[in-house]
Image (cartoon, rainbow, N blue to C red; front, side):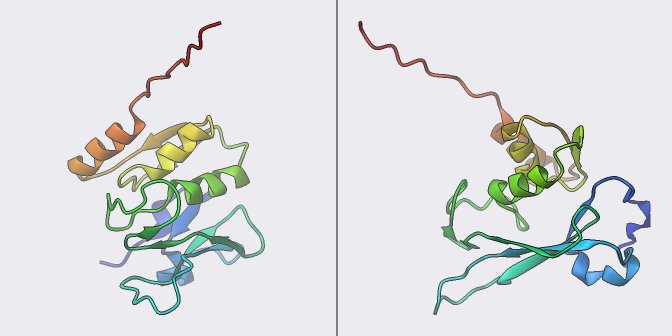
Length: 155
């Protein structure tokens, strides 16, 4: 059965990854985000070189360049593959900064929790929903409260 986006509350700020596969079912007024994965010249890439997301909160296309190809990754989770469609936390934080007035971030396809980690780093409230328990456990581990270390230097 094809994806039906009609259930989505797109009157709220919305970002839909992979929407290029069902763009004809979305309102035309949306803007597009492109995640350019900046593949290395000569490197054989098993996945796409970029991904697209439809949004209703940008009016002109925007590009985020961030290396993310197999073990070749910038930033958090370098070489760590937690989910088949995992996105970098840095990408999700970039998107969240475009909608600073959204009181709560909701990710109905949470996966391993990159959006929720980004929301936490940005000081935002977030709700994640995931059907696969193993990914919920990974997300919970990633979101676990860290311990602050106080570097006490003798005076």
